Image (cartoon, rainbow, N blue to C red):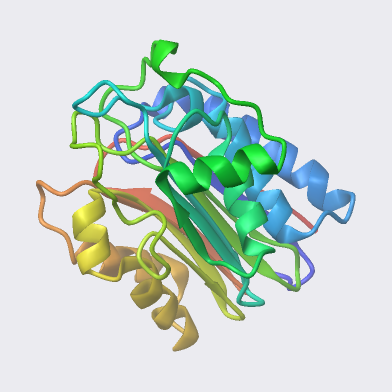
Length: 260
């Protein structure tokens, strides 16, 4: 695979219906168009995730599942291979949390949570939206995400509505660096699935470490999937300078586009 290729992968979450890959196709198409216009990879990854947040079939943004108290509390994160990372956790009433995370990546902070993350978003000009009035049809799905390579730099981005029915303060892997996502000079990784298991396995960083060792993405994928028990859902997108891979131990809508 040429180092000058443009590459993007997007997924709708472990457990998402394979038939919904038209949604991930759309995210990849938008991302590729942005890369063709020289948009920075971190922005490309976040814009691709924005498409998925706006698709109510997936558990992120407008498709987010409600917590045990009926609230919608979302997490999002992004990272590029220049060590720029930003995340928000338990943010409410914001339609596209990934763009708030993108702003955090450009700030002096790395992670903002709860009401303070919401206030930060309002100060940036994001509009407050009553997410609890949105009727999600995304049962049984997990975190959405994207990984991108523009021939020089890598990026990854994630967004989630969390585990439906969980207590309001619950935080999964998404906003924790090296758990849900990681990007470095050798590649990018985006994970989806059972957040607590993904966190305990340091899934994204350990998968990236295999790329660093020269292990091919497909082998890294198979190894990472083996870290999880059958009852723990897990899916991954992986891109390196030479190859790419994606897969899950559940159904998972996912897509990829490349262009030389």
